[in-house]
Length: 222
Image (spheres, rainbow, N blue to C red):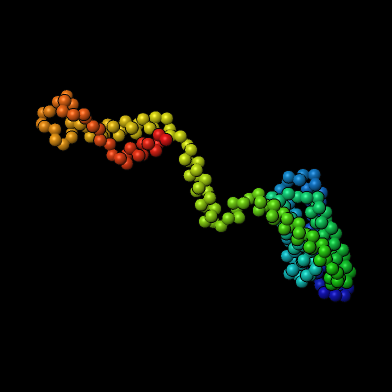
């Protein structure tokens, strides 16, 4: 892609990318006025992502590297990281650098040589710090699925253990236990026709309740 007769693909790229970058500039100005507007960040990310993809398709490595670094920072902000003034300044500087490269590309038909390592390193550092911030704010999201499930289960059980039983639930269960417990009249060894009064005369009456049932009641009461 050299000489005064650039092919149609490059000219189309220059026109569309110029429009996208102008929109990014306007959206950044809006974002400074509405810093909590997530739609603006998502739109900026989409525009930069489109420019990056087109640069990779045409074969413009310098522009692709710059837009990729800027996209990484904007992506972290889109996901909820705090937007710093230094990050906005770096992104604006990146947009200006891209426009400079595109101006020479339009004139000469090819990317000009240049070194963008310092700016790219700055953008990568901003993206990494934003990523770490998100990780600190969302610790459980970084767990593997099994660990996350166990953490949620433990929290649920801990909550359930402190919930008091519903009013009347313990008396109702106790009443059921004692109503269904064997009566002294049903005890083996009692002669036919012997009354409870006769049984009391020979010894104290006992009420037999299953041990597991007693343990269950004690657990509910405690």
